[in-house]
Each structure stands twice: as structure tokens, then as C-alpha cells.
Image (cartoon, rainbow, N blue to C red):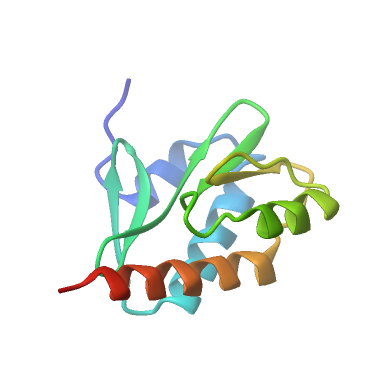
Length: 121
């Protein structure tokens, strides 16, 4: 497996159909969390503020966004599923033909940063 030096390299090597989603995810994350640190962690893009916040990965037919089970509550999962997204305990999937659930993502990002800040000593 190729090791990626940075997020731009990861996106550049992704399939053509995944790239628009990846670019928009990156933009939304940086827009919502302008002070976040972006890096490759576990060979996928991750963003940190006081701790890990969110990461994403390209799979065969979708992009998986991992934000963790602490903020992906049953209520949040239900909202995303009602909007047509598949969810897991701490993840949601964006199929290549779906739009990014921007408002959901922004809300989850802010909740995760708040949770990270509460954990600080």
C-alpha cells in the first residue's frame, strides 16, 4: 500500500469520482475548524483540535467519514439515515452520487471539538 505524504497527495491518488467529495470534505472541515491540524494518520486524512476530530477514507463505492461514537448519537445517525446516508457507530458513508451532508457534518465537527476541549486537563 502506498504511503501518502499529505492530504493533497491522498486526494490526487483517489478515483476521479471520489475526488470532488474529498475536496469538498476538506474544504468544509477547514472552513468549520480553521485552526485544525491536517495530517495523514493511519494512511488516511485526519484533522485534529485538542485530539482527533475527524478522518475520511475512500472505499470502492463511497467515502467513509469517521467522527467517533461519542458524537454520532442515535439521534444523529437517525437524521443522517433519514437523509439517505448509511451510518455506523461512529461513521457515515457518502456514496459517490450523493451530496455531502454539510450541515450535519458541521454540527458533528463542532460537537467533537467541544468534547475534546472538555477532556483537556
